[in-house]
Amino acid sequence: MKKELSGEDWWLIILTTYSYFQVHEPHLFYLTQRRKGAKELRVWSK
Image (cartoon, rainbow, N blue to C red; front, top):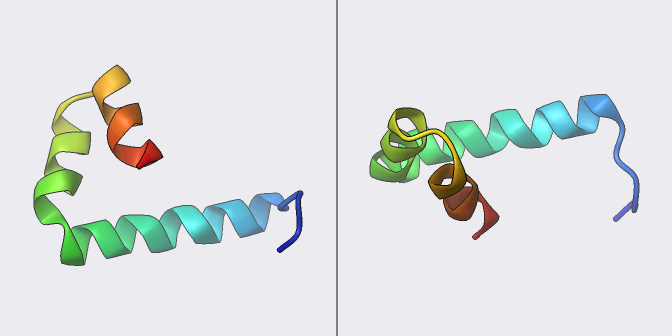
């Protein structure tokens, strides 16, 4: 895997992750949308 990703690669990863969470982890997706801040970062860092 390349160490540096282009902007387009990052957007693809972000969109794919969002889609996955919406389908497979709706409760986590809901929490990330409702609670902004440190708690959101902890969820995504896992």
